[in-house]
Image (cartoon, rainbow, N blue to C red; front, side, top):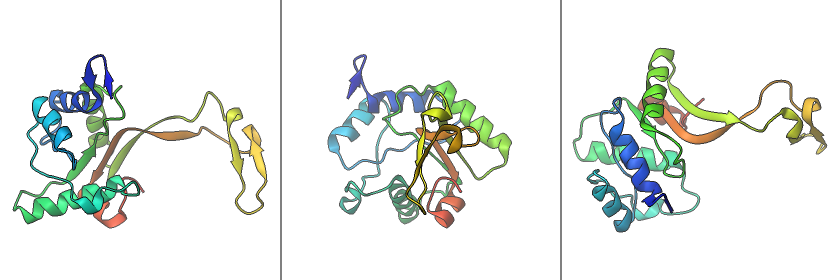
Length: 169
């Protein structure tokens, strides 16, 4: 898709390239068209996602772990952390990437993911009790703030990714 004459992929590549905190940037795709788009945006591509990962049930972690294995197989230097930037979050800016990386570095944690409020208030939420099947809403269901992953950032140490098979624990 395009927004303002630029594809979501081009926006993501340019934003990543403008970041001052990323040491290396790579693209995971099986599409020659997307690889060409990334190259045109300034990101040469080397890794091609294998056919067995081109399924709707393939997760981001599956792709990242395959990319890490590909790096090892091609005698590339080890990396300590991975930041996944999905093109479907076009509102992300390079300053946001840099702030997220700096926040993560200061935290001392193994990972950082971006979230946003789940709604204007807990009163809009309806939650099913998996034991009883009953539905509860609002303050009866939730005591505190509720957030959802917003897809802007998934940053994690390679050690944690391999150990947990996920971006946060």
